Length: 251
Image (cartoon, rainbow, N blue to C red; front, side):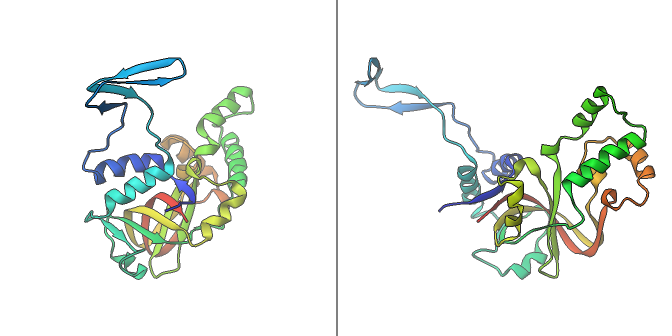
C-alpha cells in the first residue's frame, strides 16, 4: 500500500500507538543476531566476527508512512477503533463516543474567515495597541517568542453530514506546501480521535488561544481591545458537532 501523506502529527502517533499496542511500543537501539557457527563478515578492509551471539548496531528506518501503517495495524482489532472505509457507512459517525479513533474519507475545509498572514499582522498591531509590546528590537523578539508561525493551528471542518466534524491542525505537521492547501478539500482519508461532542453552539477557532502563545492575562487585555475586528474574533458555530484530533491525512 502506498500513502500520499498530507499531514502527520508525530506527538499524537506516539501517544495512541503506545495505547493501541498495550504499552509494548519499542524503540530498537541494538539488534542481536544469533548464529550457529562462527563466521567472518567483511567490508573492504573492515571485518568483524559473528559467533553464537553477536550485536549489530544499526538504525531502524522509522518514517511517517511506516509509523502510520504500524498504527493502523495495531488498531485493527481494537474495540475503540471504527473503520468507515471498510465497515459502517459514514453517516454512523454521529454514534461515535469520546476516546474513539476512526478512519474515514473526509474532505476538509479551512474556514473562510481564517487568513494566517492577515491575522498575524493584526495580532502584532493589537499587541502594540494594547501596550503589551512596542516597536524595538527587543519587542520584535518578544513577538517572535509568542508567535511561532510554524506552530500556528488552522481551523478545518467538514459539514457534509448532519453532524459537523472539526479540528485544529498544526501547521508544522502539514507535509504539503501552502499553495497546495486546497488538497485538504479533496477526498482524503483521515485518521482521528474523538475529543469532544457538542450539541449547539461551540467555538471552532479562537485566535487568541489557538493562534498565539499568550497567557490568560495577556488574552484578557487583548479581548478588551479587539472591538469589532472580525479577524481576531472567535469563530462561533451552531450545530451538532464532533471535535477531533487528527493524527493523519492521506490519500
